[in-house]
Amino acid sequence: MSIINQTRQPIYRDDQEVDPLYNPIYGATRALVGFTQGLFKHLPSGRYRWSSDPNQTEIMISDLMPITSEMLSFRPAVLTMTGQVSFGNTAQASLQDVNPKTGHKVYRDILSSTVTFNCISRNGIEASRIAWFIAHHVKSLRVFLQRNGPFLRIGHDVMILGEQPAGLIVQDAADGGAINVPVAVPFALAHKWEVREPSYEHDTTHVNLTTIGVGDSRTTNSYQITNEVN
Image 1: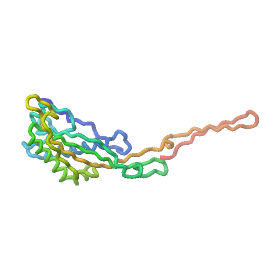
Image 2: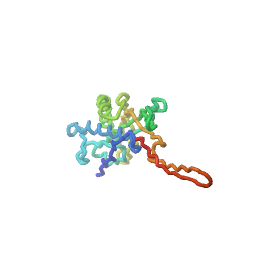
Image 3: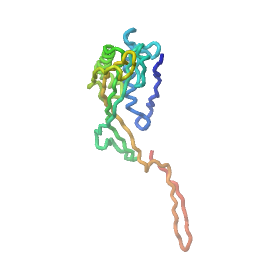
Image 4: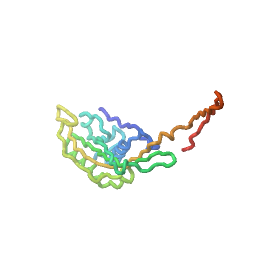
């Protein structure tokens, strides 16, 4: 039996505001996946109880990745997919402040996106039951998500989409494939970044001063000016 690889790249939380490799949308998606896994982890055995052990779990919950009919023949799956991301442009040029000592500019804006939970099963009733369970708890526990996650707004506009016909997710010539009931969860989060002033980035300035005297005599003095701005 094929098992979905549940390993993920780590989230680097050190200096998130200035690290260009930190992806806040990826962090938000990870938070929602972990939240959903926690919901199903507390269900009783035999009721779609989730476990980190791929051999013990009764439901697969992970990021969007290819699945096969072999996987779904044993258990349903919840796979997340992140939609497009947009900047809100909530202030003039998104500028928050300028450091008068260094000239560095700090910007802040609001990012908006949507995470879709694809609730996939061989049975449409089972897929709808799982979709309702996720949508209901995201709506009910939105305050918990805002307090413990990176979200400014979440759980207000949860949408349970219509049942998608079999064969769109997994094509199977034997029984027609799997049925998907998507749950769309829009969210917004704050994003802050800094743009450093290039003229303050050098460490030292080398200066050569040449003084022309009487006749052809010349005097050259060299100086090192150290940047003392931190």
